[in-house]
Length: 388
Ligand SMILES: [Fe+2]
Image (cartoon, rainbow, N blue to C red; front, side, top):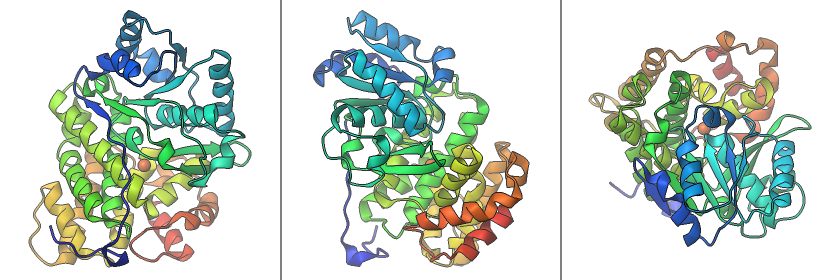
């Protein structure tokens, strides 16, 4: 690895809290880990689908056996709103909980961060939209992912929809880093095929957007390339059968590393557009980031073509030839992944009305941040019309 190709003259910041329990069955360590964190009454926020599928039952049993009086809350919203998090906080406060556990995908883990935030910080969730607004440390927050996607278990952010206008807020503060992540690939066993595919593509989008970001650093690059190398070759086998523990472990580790990456590099055009589509048209996040990814990769290829050679190598596809040629090959590989996983590739096929696209551009242009190629509203409109 060479120390070159970075913006900012090589200076960078990298924030992470790696307190991790990884491995099949690691969720059983939760009672002991809670004791180590000094927590005795956790507010357990479980995604309702995960709860109904019985995924969290072994965890609940372990808590019971460990004599821990948990309050189990299953009314977690998909794309959680500030109003829903504030309602959940009301329940947590009434039941005098001293810690929060999020079990599920990004929605459950971000909801847990939101409730933890309100336990020690006054006011409303919306007061903390933006960077470094969180004033006080949170009580212990433990994140237990049941999808291999968002990486929220190791990110310093929470995505929350503002109920008043459907704007997707992004709360960013090192204080939002969970105190502990328990990544147990055996919990992915019953993940439905569609969710496995969409969340896998989202994780890949994190790794690729983070690697191409103008805020990439030697540390984030290290994790991004590892993540791409774990995710791209394993996502097909994982979606075909999430009980394949090798594939599930690769996906779980890859999505976690990709989460550490984006927590530090931010994301580019793909996530800017996907967040706007999620807020306005309720398009599931992974479906949006997946279908946008090849188009955004093609758009960005001229900015950092040399990085696409590294991406291709990490993906395990041929990296010979000119940089632009390799970039096109890496982009095609992502397009092929979408097709192989039966993920939608056109906005028109997922019920997004064409007349809302200008609004999507208007919101997304404010969030293109660290995208490697400078982007105008016209560019975003062109990307959207190509995906449409
Ligand atoms: Fe994402």
